[in-house]
Amino acid sequence: MTPGGWNRMRVELHELVHKERPALTQLINWAAGNGDRSENGDYIYGKKRLREIDRRIRFLTKRLENAEVVDPATREATDQVFFSATVTVLRGSGEEQTVSIVGVDEINLDLNHISWISPLARCLLKAREGDTVTLRGPAGGEEIEILEVRYIALD
View: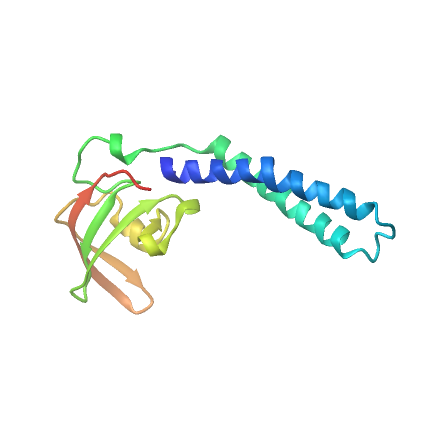
């Protein structure tokens, strides 16, 4: 994953552990003190939300422990497409498109960040600037020309 993606996950984990979870446990304790728990909406919802938060904390902790951070800004200059590359391509329709290849947890189509396992990224990986690759899809193949490969810091 990229440094930006790793940092966003770390911030989310910190928010869950140090803010959301303590506030929720306080609400659950208050609700439990109100009497019958079987009909207490605050208690029932709170316990359910607490399980969701704990599940997300476990997921983020494991992801951050096992993540390999790849900083595109420190990568040596090359015209070959690898993970964390920002690639400008010319689609078969004549449209130019710029995409950045990131980890599966960092996908953001608004920023044109695509997963390294997406069909487009898979056909671009290991190709070089100036190459033409074929993207195979349900409607057939599409010729895509690689115009530029850059390694820049991603937010």
